[in-house]
Image (cartoon, rainbow, N blue to C red; front, side, top):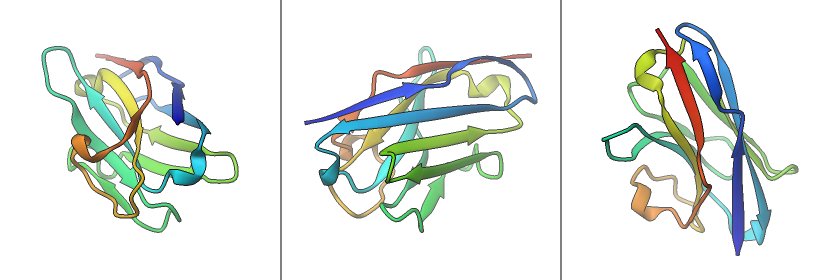
Length: 124
């Protein structure tokens, strides 16, 4: 089994920055692609960013492209999301996810493991 634990959420003013981390534990050898998703109140969970095992391939939602950066440190079994130029519409619970397959995908249903989420609130 794999456990994912997010940290780093909080309250920030619009235009500010925040960094999220996701620590993986357990059978981390089965983890390949990883991603970040978010869910705002009353909305469906949506894709934010994803990264391949090597970190050589990254994908972003259009809404965060140029503002967010996903990265990972496999030696530390940790996934990161650096969020800059934050907007009130970025307010959501952010979830870390991992899948047992190599291919990086965006649909949330194709991820096998999920963290409990961390709240990010951007004030205007």
